[in-house]
Length: 307
Ligand code: HEM
Image 1 (tube, rainbow, N blue to C red):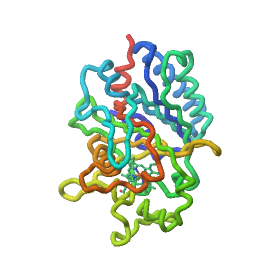
Image 2: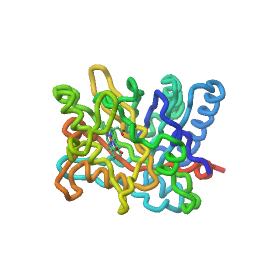
Image 3: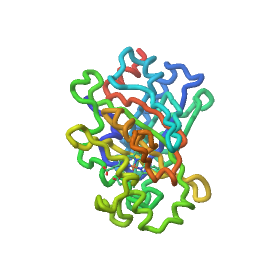
Image 4: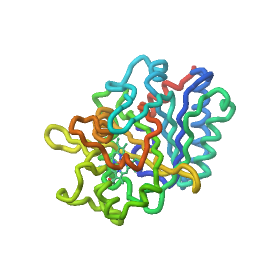
């Protein structure tokens, strides 16, 4: 079976994320719309073979239950967290991840998806994202250094295995938009910023354990199994922003196991039991958040079949 095309390759320079609720759109109309969207995507791929056009379509748990009689094991809605910081949840029916080397193509695909249904859906977010400089978050730190880089590792991290049957090569998705307070971030000197992230700013080299604070972002985000093996996720996050308006990160991660994300978030937001929270949260604010499931291509096709 084949994973949806955006998941395994390294990110392209541009992405657009669409998060919505169906509101008045019927399920049959959604299926038709997505089929048209894929027809447009495939035409654009033929016309622009160098544009690295990739997509994934993922469904929230409530909509999934209406689309297919079975649930992939472990699929659930994200739970809000009230710890040192509040982590909101905004459940959504659909997440579309569009990526390309060209921002105009991301636009054209979004335009094609919304064609004729704008008034029937509740758009929670449409986010235009970009690779910033040499792969940096707007804090100026390189984002993705410890991401699995090779296709095998990326698949092993993100995709459900053979034991998942019909759901094999599907992936759970966590999406959460963050708004940065860059004014306050910029007031920190570079070495203080490095202590917040846990890596050096220029080269993204991990700080030694004796200098890396226990509340550094990477100290909170790294989780391990009982044997001390690191449990990874596959991040595709990208910055967004207006020069004079909101600026931040659209965080998105693909995983074969949502409990990994649960654990990372509990450690970040300060409810994992050790009384520590992620210091990065003093500078960035989560404004929504939800879990989704991105089925493999074959199952997606089966679900969207309206015959
Ligand atoms: C605004 C929000 C965030 C920013 C700016 C941010 C930024 C970063 C940066 C700069 C790194 C270090 C380089 C790297 O390995 O990629 C990193 C690592 C990481 N982040 Fe985040 N991150 C954010 C939110 C999150 C969230 C919400 C999660 C998980 C739910 C997360 C999970 C991770 C993981 C797993 C790593 C790799 C740790 C390691 O193996 O060393 N991050 N992040």
